[in-house]
Image 1 (spheres, rainbow, N blue to C red):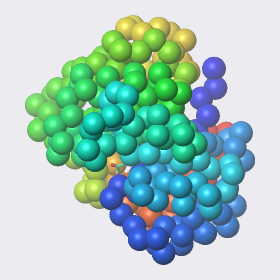
Image 2: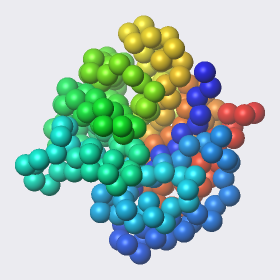
Image 3: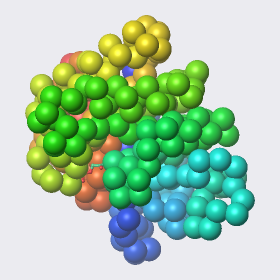
Length: 253
Ligand SMILES: O=C(CO)COP(=O)(O)O
């Protein structure tokens, strides 16, 4: 099954109303490949979700950067999956390494979150990735497999899941994984899915790369057979995000 190229922009904890409007204007004016070729999702902080959704072109969609693990209630400061559905937010990013590291989100907690968000009808960008120390000790694959397993154990339907491989050492560092490094892990992850979840799911699930992707390095990464798109941080706040979206055309050549 063909995997449609996917480009996500994770704005993280950035932006003012004016800056957000400016980014949306740039995106709205951009000429990009059609929705048949590339799926584009931008993820502003919670407080700007409705604004961005109301202004953004209709062929692009929005994602939240997190949601609560279960039904809402007495959980001060949290935002529930039901609320996102109520606002018409179709996507949510779950398990970003910044939350895993800074907020102590465990593999199991991330798996529970993915399952709950899917059960409420959200589509999920689920993030996995190893630290530099883990890569240097040769445990990259066992780390990302354990993170993926904790999700796989909690869900049966992968139709609404995009898996984002984001090596922690490449996030916000300017140290992008080489195309070969990204391809190696994506290929291994697909193999893991094939052996542990199912061949069809492995063939149809998009595995996107994140970590210092920019307008200059995106095309070579996009050329790798198992790289199905990107999750972009810093560069998604800049006009070069449009060039990253356009790298989807590499797949057609
Ligand atoms: O964490 C990321 C996307 O979720 C990647 O961030 P950078 O593109 O800024 O490295």
